[in-house]
Image (cartoon, rainbow, N blue to C red):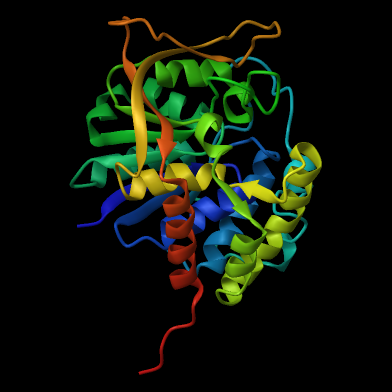
Length: 318
């Protein structure tokens, strides 16, 4: 039986790769997609998620909008410079129109209903700010046993990408991230920049993606703006597939090599806001988060490309 999955996302170019990767993977069944503010405002992330589901021919997957702002303080920064004003490299309007609007239950209500209905534990994959997941855990503590694990992309134990040491998803809502990382009821796997910034899809990988079929060609075109921004910032002719790594770990548990560490998130308003602090002391107290710090990177890149290629290829005629 495929593992039931909920994707919580803020598309975003790398979110688009990740969402389509989940839909391409037979090991899982995407039971719901929920959206959150993040790379662009919530109405845009929700419209983008709907169009991506339409691109995949999966209008059957329920989609619901969630939080439009962080739990406590206003969002300090968005990421249009990386993803384009429309979140998808300027190409969102060229994607198929969705068949229906968002589910009126909202993100937390939809997630709760999926958890109640699933015959086995559900994997929750937040690849944007963790606001919706923190709200789910707070509002529905009776459903924590229905969550098999949370596999999140975010944070950094070293250099950040939004401030010197803070990563965008965690920096966008540090209080929500702290709530998720410090609870003991649901196992958490965290895929941070320490790994994702080493998993770089180069020009050849992107060309292979573009040649993998019509839908992947659209996806590769979306990556163009992100690729340019990455090259400008880092001087590398490549892109980091941040969110896709978290999805691949959710699809094939054990793909990434993890280290158990208690984590805290700095929630003050100073220069350390959003920094993830790991307690590396032996027998450090607190729930351990499984932090993905290593992987067979060529194998990961190859696996993502292979799955997207199979998804994009036209069906074989009988």
